[in-house]
Image (cartoon, rainbow, N blue to C red):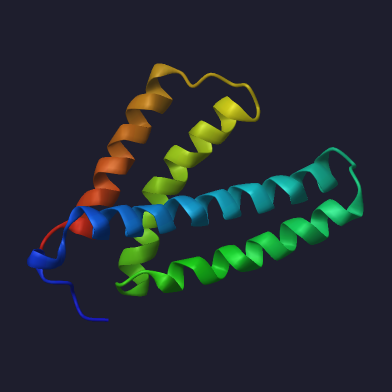
Length: 119
């Protein structure tokens, strides 16, 4: 795909693309978590099937982004890191330490530069 002109970078564009990154992260983390529960916690096999289906959906979501594969996945990586920290806080009840918070902010800024910098 072609690069998006700087004039097309508005709040709606940023909100929709960032929203797709968040949805993708929730699907990847949630699907992986269900498989984790099945394998590591010896839970019901149906969790693995649901987790696998969610992971399949995760694979489709990034194709909706208006950029090339490398840029989308490089940017997504930063959002994924932050969402994993948030997942740990909300689901695993593990409070992030200051280095996780600092690292999360760094990768999120990096993701924004990669995806939204004018070209």
